[in-house]
Length: 239
Image (tube, rainbow, N blue to C red; front, top):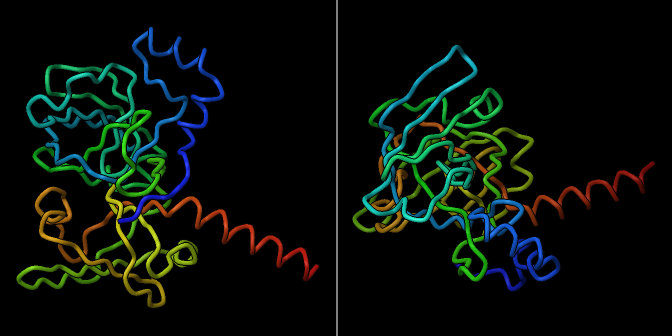
C-alpha cells in the first residue's frame, strides 16, 4: 500500500516542540504526545488471563511473542485489534491492560476469552516507516463478517457496517480492520470487501475469522475529514 506523502502529526509536533520531546524521552515515556499507529500489525498475541469485574470492566494479561515486549514501558500505548490501550504492568513478555465501559461498548474486546488471539501493534516512533496509513487506535464501530471466500492464494472478505459509517468507506480507500491497514475493494450498500494475501492471513487474526464474527473498524481520518467538511458546506449553502 502506498504511503501518504506528508509528515505524521507526531513528526510535525516533535519538530515544533523539541524541548518537550527531549524531556519525555529522558523520563522513559513515549516521545509523541499522542499514540499513532501505522496499521501494519506486528503479530498475534494471546489472551492469557481475563478478569471480569461486572459488566463494564475487564483486566487483560496478554502474552506477546518472545522478546517483542522489549522496550515497552508502563504507560506506553499498544493497539490490540486496532484499539489503543495503555500498558498498566509488564511481566516479561506479558502485558497488562485495563478495558473500561466505553471501550467494551464500541469494540470487540468484550468478546475475548482466554486463549483467543488479538492483533498487536506497538505505537509508532519518530522516523518509523508508515507502511500502511495513519491509524489512531480510536475504533469508530464494529462490523460483521458477512462472507469469507477462499481460493488457493487469495481470500475475499465482506464486512457489513452501520449505515452512518459507510459514507467514509470508498473504493480503493483506506480502512483499518482489527488494526490492519487494508485497501477497500468493492462497496455495495452497507458492506464493503477487502482482498487478503496469504501473509496477512498468516500474521494476523484475520486468518482465524469466520462468517458472523465481529471486527473493529477505524475509518481513514483524512477521508472522514473531507466527507464531513463537504457535508457541512453543502448544508450551509442550502440553509
